[in-house]
Image (cartoon, rainbow, N blue to C red):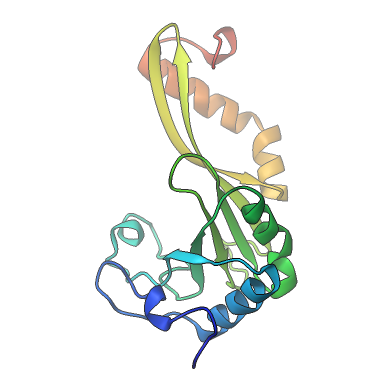
Length: 179
């Protein structure tokens, strides 16, 4: 199936070369790209289950199902994609707009028990500093969902951070200054 701005090969697994990408996904990407009028550089499409990113997961994700792609984009173009994604049938939108590896994840997955849809999230890699001691924590922070609001409002996140700090710094988070 030909697309004006995409070749199916762009979506092949970068680990093994296999391609199980959904044509429905490419159709939606093409429609969104046509409306927005700027290039979409695909940095990740289909991923086999042995792909290093998928292999680290408990269960393979939307890329391994052929239902997701990551688009290299930044600034106002990223905002345009996020703003219009739902109108084109994208049910999952992940945002990474920090550092050099900026991208927007778009997927067309249906809701599952461990995968609410529609859903938007942000990838945050955070470094906390405490009196010159660096504590690095890497985690995915969910935005704009009931589950995220619950997480933010719950004491669970606070206690998790306190536990991590105690583990590495033998102190408690509420009495310290984080930058």
